[in-house]
Length: 225
Image (cartoon, rainbow, N blue to C red; front, side, top):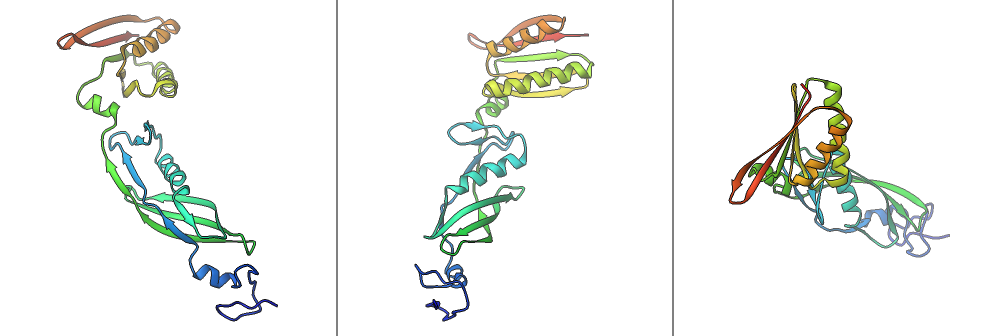
């Protein structure tokens, strides 16, 4: 019969390797260290910067991002393995409530624990929002129509475009009379405008204005009125 070297109990599960019971093992702490998590986020569109700016469609996507980041930063002590993690973030993104399931390998059991972590948050405009703020976009598509189905289809096309080239589409704004889409690339704006024009007959008009020197800004009108 094994006896816990810490509490002296013999009617509990004792690890033959460590010589202590599960309760005493847990009391000694299961996590050795959690490396600080720094987050750089755009306060305007909520993109997060890793190796590049990553678009986040929902607040939950930010929480998933933090979960994955924390997985590599949580260092458990010997005999403990992180099995599950779930993060709830405060609305200001300065604090994370972390729920974890930890496997106690010597005891063949799982334990749950909760911790609160402060986050090192840095807010800075992403490249796309900075271009828009400084009016440094290269092309603007103006779709003009009150047909809701047509506007919905164009937005769906833009969402596909986001996946293919999110660095080029800066922002879109929807109105009751149509939609505006801002691009950092004229060639990409033309590409999407021409593809949509081929599907639906409309008046196509392209104009340009001088920004500075030899630099131009283009407006592409898709008029369905």
